[in-house]
Image (cartoon, rainbow, N blue to C red; front, side, top):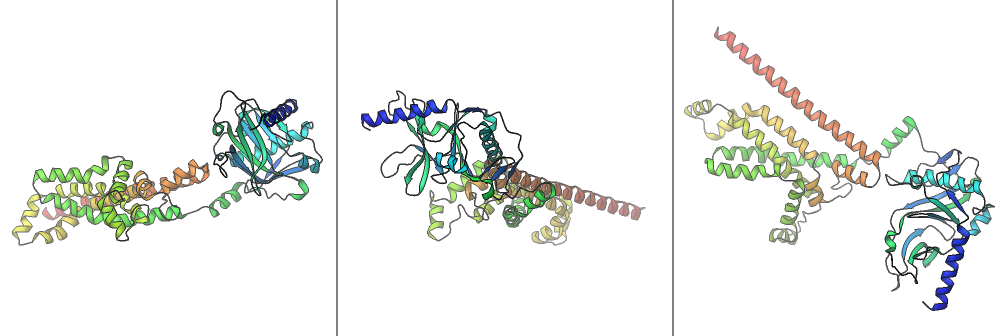
Length: 454
């Protein structure tokens, strides 16, 4: 940049700062007018104000990509050349409203205190609706400078508004002052930016958000229920594998020596004690393209990783130990003399297993099945690692809770938390009722046998 251009930039920055220092309004001072915000949180009007906001967007992050070989600073997108922008810095908030827009509205935000407060009131309401759990403009309580041009800066950085980087695309750009002794990281200078359009109230139609039961039913109607169906489908499919493999593994450990039984038991039980993320990592490495098995699967058209079958695999692995341990305990608790008596009657091992051992162990098998189902429903870490988070494909309810909360959609996260709690309650209630029913049946049978003997 040539020396004369540097001087021009510095002069314009200084001039803008001088003009803005007298235009500071405390953010904590808020007008008492009633604000109406639309359902989408993109438009708002304020009672008593002649203007409103439309096309409101909160940008928490910008972009610092190079355009056509030139670095143009850290940029936040603006809707239009005539859009307003609110740049939230560490110690000050700059509210940029183009002079042409102010003229068309018949306002002067630099000198009209009431118009300033009305604009801030609108911004507070819309920002609270779009903050999604983040710090809001109102909470920061920073001094505000209303400006109608730019650039503006503090000797280290410069902000310019309505910069047309690409044809038809406008940005608010943060750049380092060319004469600054220190070179700050522009991506860390601003907390966030608000932008939108100011329009006369007569040109805005704001449909207020519903309240009470209307809001509740509207929330349910707009809810994406796919995580529930993905979770249910994944858990039920995994349960089929868990049921068969759990019974087979429990029977296998009864037929081998104690030393081999200990080794097999450790292998079958280890997913119960390993962190889910470790299980997911091992599955990802095993079936990804980093191993011979993974490459063979991919070469044969089987892409298991980051697919719904991968979610089933993860749920099967983490739920299997619960089924295995429960069934094995039931088998080991059975009377060995009774089994030997069946053998003396000529029963083979298959008949003994299916006609005697399984019926006697059925209460424990049912309990293990329900517990395995609950574990599969609640799986998170392994599923995220090996299957990813794809809406409608691999996004289960636990994944939805995490990503809804991370995205600031707390209401949706709470909804899924309630659903998971209710499902867990039903599972526990079923186990308790079934155990009580089984206990009553056994007590009743024992009483009948005792009366027969007498």
